[in-house]
Length: 241
Ligand code: PXP
Image (cartoon, rainbow, N blue to C red):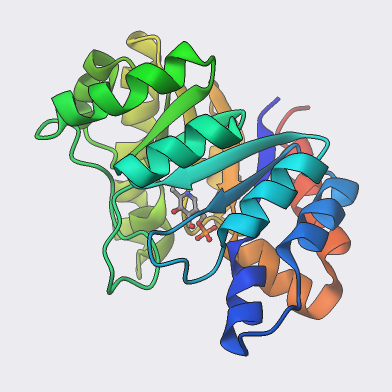
């Protein structure tokens, strides 16, 4: 059964819009778990535009499920990962001007860099995931690096403006899931998934986790966090009959 892992970054985005103390992503993580989240994801960006170091510390200490800490492959982030010891880290590319993570890592060009980054992480028993596009050559490079998981970027599928393009992007993701499984990589999916487009994956074997932020926080802003997570968990539970 795939797990629903909820990203609470955008609760912190609302807080930072007023440079205030609320809403608190620590409370959001608690309520997401009450609603059925089986893990919490936060992205500590280098510019701290939403999640900050205090959030990482408190969420790690207070959640009852697993913490997945998303980060760029920098020395600073590596040392935070080693100190915090989350259940998993997910490496993502980071650009200062982007609204959200825009694409996958270039594992082909940066193979040695990511291998060096992950070595001490793995030595501490922290799981690792690489966020990559649905591209067979990137998946092979991720396997060569020695990552345990990949998170396949579903944003191009989610953002497709017509059915033909969405079907083509979906096909790429499905082919990538099977390539990854052949290489013994565990597969997570994330980016742009919502209560409707996630249903395309209902009968697809081998998906470990769905990483979902924006759609859940958007619904939470109107209906409450617990209800928003419960609704998404129910969609995923219907995948397995
Ligand atoms: N996975 C990764 C690697 C991300 O960077 C994000 C966005 O922070 C997500 C998943 C969640 O995407 P969304 O907010 O569109 O659900």
